[in-house]
Image 1 (cartoon, helix red, strand yellow):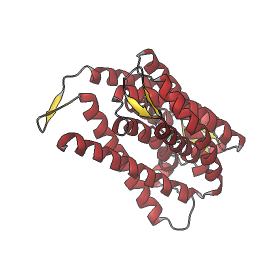
Image 2: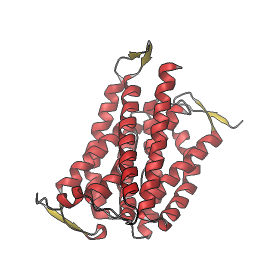
Image 3: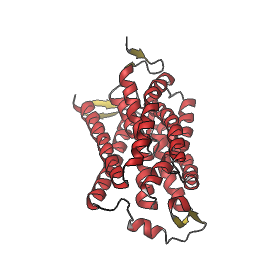
Image 4: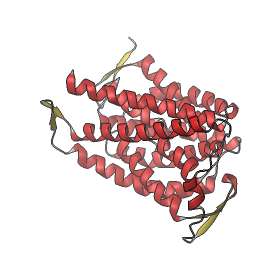
Length: 304
């Protein structure tokens, strides 16, 4: 009675489970400024059995809807650098198109045999990408927050050096407390994040959030709001592309939204009371759960 068969993928899902997943993803968007796709996409694949292409497309549409709500809430709290966010979004849109095209090519590839079991190339590549990127982000942030026991913000050697680069045009970002920064640095970083958006069904926030803090040097709370704004624009474009390709389960997105609407409100409120260091550390711990999920999926497919 509480199950539903999705028309596009033919998969039967448990509705309360999908709603709870929506609450979790909405909470992550509000708290960290990330789309939550780094958990949503693999969870839809591993827990609910939804094929990766459909999980990717549906995740992006869900992330876009949640990001609209979260961006508005962070804007009201004056935690969004719209100027920096728009530059990041411009680069991300280019990268997203590249990512979508890579995913389309992977879908057409011949299966790869591992332990005498066929693996679709798209499953293998995405699992490896999730594992490498999530592990790297989680380990780096956990080490940083363990070393920094007092300061709420970070000032890395990379961000200090990048502020000395004089590759014109030079821009000022008052909201992010940046007095001079080359236009080309955030735009190139954003292209990389956009590729992840189109390819992996993530808003790119799980990479964009630490890049804003550790590479560009944006204060944590501003990075949260700016990241979710960039995620909104990138996931909107990626979601539209996948909708055109027939990779979006509208019913699934609707059920997820029921839970995520409440989750976003809670996440934004919690982000206002946590210090920057605690936000970064909790973010790393959540990313680590994504690593464990991907590892389990690989073990399950290869050995069981």
